[in-house]
Image 1 (cartoon, one colour):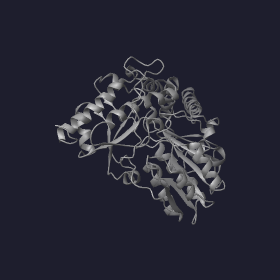
Image 2 (image 1 turned 135 degrees about the vertical axis):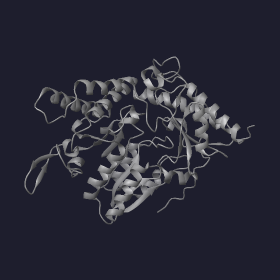
Image 3 (image 1 turned 45 degrees about the vertical axis):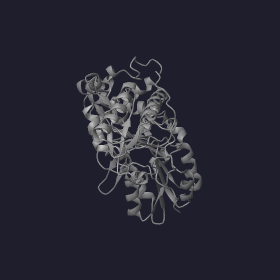
Image 4 (image 1 turned 60 degrees about the vertical axis):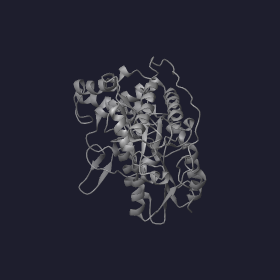
Length: 438
C-alpha cells in the first residue's frame, strides 16, 4: 500500500517568533556554552558556524583529553602485561561506561564502539540482517532516513530477497504513523528510522514507533533507531525507548571524528554473529574452528580507537554538564527566532514542523536562488551553512527540490548567528535580484 502524500513544499506550520532567551548560566552573548570553550570559534570571533548537524566544533575539554591520552597513557590495550597498557585498557573501559550512562544504557558491555553511525548501521545490517532476514520478509524504513540507514537496509533487503517498504511523511514533515502501521505485519523483520531528521530537524516519537513496530510485527521486527541527530540535542534513555539498536556518531556531539557507538539489547547482540574477525574478538582459535569473545569484544576486532573513545567520553561529559534539556531549549529558541524571521522574507520556503517539534535545524529554499549560490554568498560573510541533498535524496524528492539550504544550531550558537544568517539571505537576494530585492 502506498500512501497518497503530496510534496511538502510550502507546508510548514509557521509559528510566531519565540524570542531568544538565555538558558541557565548562559554567557552574555546568548550562547548556552561559551565560545571560549571552543578554540576554533574563540580564534575566529567573526565566524558564524551553522553547520553543526554535519559536525560539531570540539570543546577544549575534548582536545585536552585526546592530548592527555596520547601524552600519558598511549599503549595497545588488552595486550600488554605492563602498567601503560593497563592504563590504556582502563581508560577505554571507563570511556565505555561513561558513554553508556550518558545514553541511559545500564549494561555498558552492550555499548559497542564503532567508527560512527554509518558503520553501526552496516554492522547491524551486515551481521544481524544477514543472519535473520530472508526471502519473503519485509524491511521498513522512512522517507526521512539518512542514506546511512536508507541505503544500508535497502541493499540488505535486495540481497536477502526481502521486500523493502518506505513509510511516507505527513505534509508538515513528520513520519506518517498511519502509513507506517499499514506497512507492518508479522513478515516485518526490520523497522529502521531516525530519532531526528538531519534535513528537517523533526523529532520522531521513538517509543511510540518502537511499540507500534513490535505490536504489528508480533515481536519479530528488529527496531533500529539512527540517533546521529538525537544524542547531540536530546536526552536519550536507551533502556526506556524500547528499541533494539541505537546508533550515533561521536563527532556530532563534540567528540572526535572516527568514533561512535552502537547501543544494543544484550539478547539481540548475543544473537548477532561477529561481522569482522581478528584480535580481541576471539575466545579460542582451533585448527578448524574458532569461538567468540564476550560482549563487547565480539564486535571490536583489532586495535580499538582508544583515544577516540576517551575523546567521546569527554564530549558527553561536557554535554551532560550543560544539560540535554537546556541544550534543546536553547536550540528551539534560536530556531524559533530564525524561522520567524526567515519566513517573513519574500520568496523563502521553510520545510518541516513547528519549532517545538524539532531540534536545531532550519531547512529552507529561496525562489530563484540555488542553495549552493546562497551558501557561497553566506560564506563570504562568515556564515557557514550546508547546501545540498543532505544525504537524504528520498526526502528531497518528496520536497520537490534537488537541494535545500540548511542552518543548524548547537550549544555555542547565538542570536548574532541568527542575525548574520537572515542578513546574509537578504544580501543574496539583492545580489541575485530575486525576492523583490533591489
